[in-house]
Image (cartoon, rainbow, N blue to C red; front, side, top):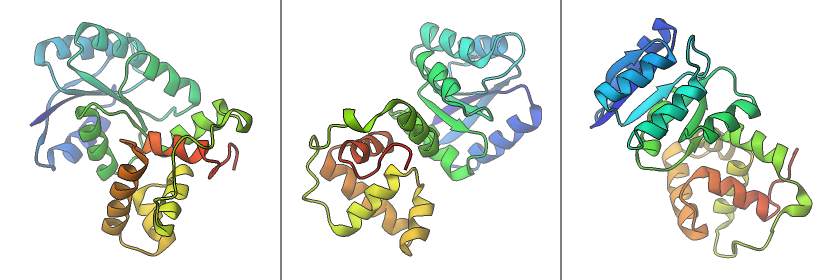
Length: 217
């Protein structure tokens, strides 16, 4: 069972998250906090596996609270959700020790997937946010285009890799290619194994490194 603490200064938002997460087997919300200081205290009390942390809260903000939680309770992982999805917010949260960053308009499915991904020890950053960071920080002349061999990919897997590189979700890829979401998931699993990446973040980087997607495209 993955235990989750919700830290957000809006009670309605916490209620929404609780309903989303408790609807899925294997995940349970064990507590809530309305500000950063309370979040740190509740983490010490409840020792949750995951904290869903808002960035902008009264008292101690989400970045500072994340820094304290990850330093004082290294077994607890932090997933930041914020309406402020600017590059500097993402970078600040990740530097503070967060294991993931999502915008608050994610779907229930995306939230559950991110909680499970972070629990497994892998970073979870929304594709569109990751794409923004790469566009900001990666330049074409620094791209290493030949690191990962792609000759073993099928034509369909190559299409999927390009769309992942453009920040598309599985649902968006399914719509673009007129195939089912389960088929997309199968292609993504095969693709990740062939190019030796463990998550979408690494796949996006491969797409940039091989010149399949260019900054600003």
